[in-house]
Image (cartoon, rainbow over all chains, first blue to last red; front, side, top):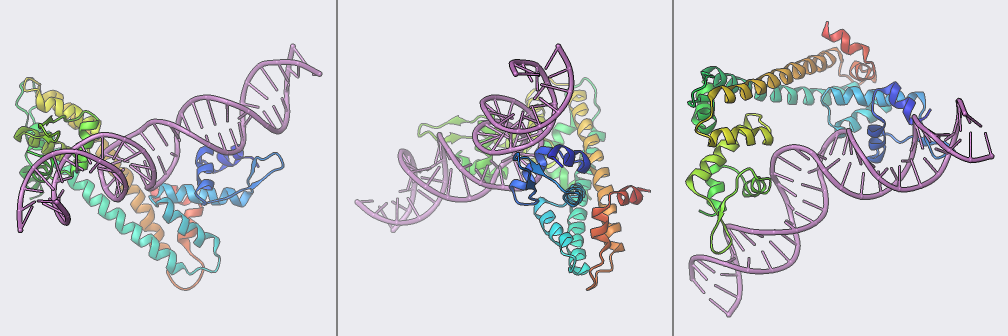
Length: 136
Length: 136
DNA sequence: CGGTTGGTTCCCGTGACTGGAAGCCCTATA
DNA sequence: TATAGGGCTTCCAGTCACGGGAACCAACCG
């Protein structure tokens, strides 16, 4: 099938599929007219990539996952190890974002939000000691 | 003071400070020798920028915040409105990341992680119906 | 006077695409 | 059969927020 159908069936934009080929993630065959030609299993792999990307794996991590996907002799422990690292990354990122959110919420709550110029958000952004203060 | 001192006192790399000047965020004066020359209030603004960036504001949002910072006649409601939008963005992002994390954790838990090739993580990544299933 | 450090500008690279231009290929319709 | 359209191709540029590094000038130290 042409790239348009593969795009539709995988949910990935054609541009992205060509990009993945360019970086050697997934190379399709070519028809006589020069068009890219995708098989059903290519579409499966594209879907695999889409889902892995949407779960926060980087393209390089997807490259590893895809090779594990393609290798039917792999050990599930290898996959699990990769996923657990990613899970820990996500937890770190979540923690960081939560702290950030709490600091910002603290700033928002402390601001009157009226027509006066005094603004504790601005003051808080200017004063880095507030950051540590919020953490406690 | 030179850019090195401004960098040290603000905590921003010199590269970043030059970049901010290039995009018109904060323009410093120049000494006779052509070096950039920073005042104490420039350093305050740089610190303000650093903190705003670290709280998840984009450079364009920082541009707005900085103009509010510079404008002593502003109304605190304007600042609060901007901060609240950002807070809502952060909440959205957190929610999305949490779902993502839970899906991944589910996949990790369901995998035996042994030497066999059967791997429910790989299966889960290949099968998008699992995603909806995890949400419920 | 030479060496080191710290400024300057400029350009390239990052990650993961997205948009757009120029041109080929295929099909449907007048 | 001519042509209009849509889909496909490649290539180039832009995104965001810088970071690395080259080539060159300025300041300072011994």
